[in-house]
Image (cartoon, rainbow, N blue to C red; front, side, top):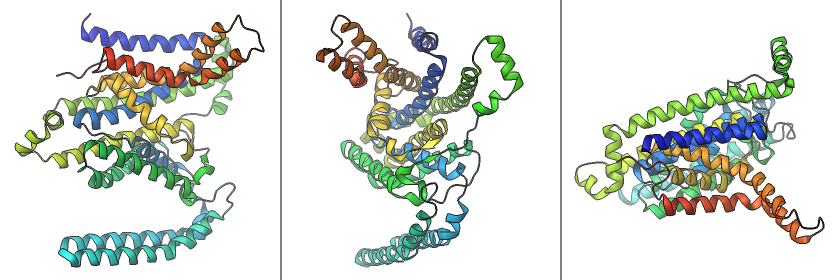
Length: 434
């Protein structure tokens, strides 16, 4: 079997597994898994751009995905007029003070040298911090008191949520520029520690800054880019279609909505995949791989290694931010507490490693495969434990323990897959083309 035929066969197998879930479990579940697989594949592409192209060990995927989620709130949530009246002016003044402080620090940095530079930057930073807090603290307190059970935050711009996908990429790219300027001079293991710590800081801020994202109270009811099931159920055409299929209209409308999401997500995935392939096979992509394989030789030939690392770090983070905004769009809610390293860092890295780092198609395959197994491992584990304990008494403590342990099958399956792939296919299921 040739490599191309084998690759097509693996993608066909994933399609067959999704069809299997639809036939034997439910089509709603199958399409839900498909949508999450598409988003996970986009995130895996972002990490592959950083690791597969340039060898950058970014363990802060969670933070950039969370910034994409913030973009969905800031763009699509309706503005809270009472909160703006209570503290909007104070927030605007504090933002102005912050910008002036940054501008003065930048000016001093480029215009002075030596000890005077350090002293002036320190004084300006301290003064700017306290002046900013003079406006910021009262404004935040006033905003969070405005009907805090339902709002307690400024809200967003009330624009279509699809625009948030691009804004999520821009926010993540801007954060990546700041993070990259600080950390990209570090060795790979220190870079991993730094990016993980910074991502935790980002998530901690989102959990505690209620005036911006409602914190742990979450933002729910975000608008959709697709129709609502209730509206579809009132359509005479949809009702007639459900009658002709002999299907409950609730199930049909759920399938229509999920297929609409799948169409949008597939379009974004294809665009990102196309651009990633063009970049990887261009002179820029060959240069990035040369830097990845031997930084010293590349630098000796006149390549700006740190500048190229910053560039690819920003690009990969932007892709992750887009996927983060898409995930919040699918859920119609933003929950800062849900951003955990296991879901938004570890699993994404497993997708890239299993699929094949340095190969964009491998990242897509890994995203689809790993998320499918992550979702299906628990019900399959429950079925397996039921079979193994079928001969035991209903009140058997061992039977109860084994059935309760099915929930932990996910972690065992992920570890087993990772071990098997690293042993028998160390370059991934679809290795990098050289």
